[in-house]
Image 1: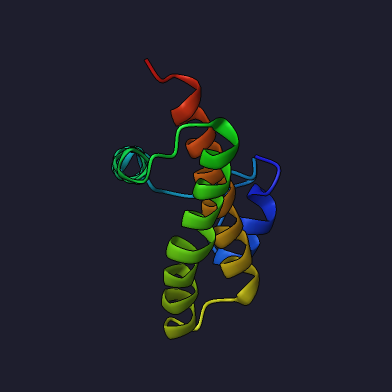
Image 2: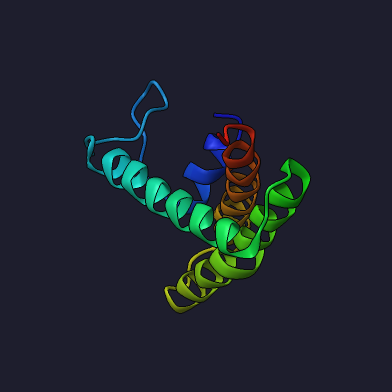
Length: 111
């Protein structure tokens, strides 16, 4: 929630008097949850194939996945859609941080 105001400003989404986005529903959240599970599953597969087992290595591998796989796609999409660069930084940072954390968590709960 810390970056929500900056994200809302960059997207241009209208908000009501309480500061919450107008309209919408649960679909973006459901799609996001599914997408995160897909990313986590693929990261786990890649980590297993590459022999990444320590939390430190998984953190770095997750960071690299977010920074060098996901963020470039965000840059391409936002550039082609002529979206604000601030939105690109926000979303790319979210993907990078999220993948790093995901990598760490994946190794903390190995059996």
